[in-house]
Image (tube, rainbow, N blue to C red; front, side):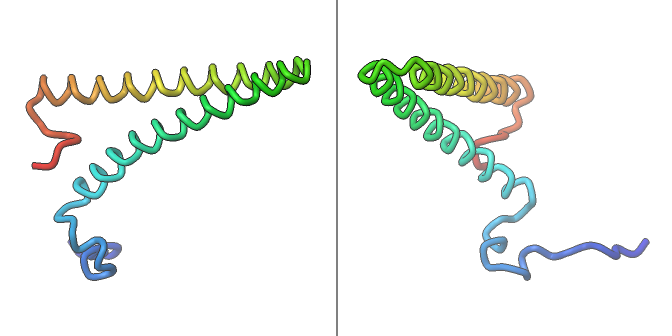
Length: 103
């Protein structure tokens, strides 16, 4: 059967030439997504804390609530990201297939 929509990624860009398979590219994206999620949750915690402090200083209860919601969302998001990382690590140990570590 003829491959009509097949595209050789390695010939389209020098960036793709460094990845042997599509799985290697996804591996790099997922590993960096964990780092990005950690940085975003840290920034949300900092800005939420500043919002609470500024709201308390001006006696603005709406700003305090916004700060609390931002911090709660950041903590819940971080818990979800860490839990997903643990699940991937457990799958790696059970199956013996390196998912997030380079071969």
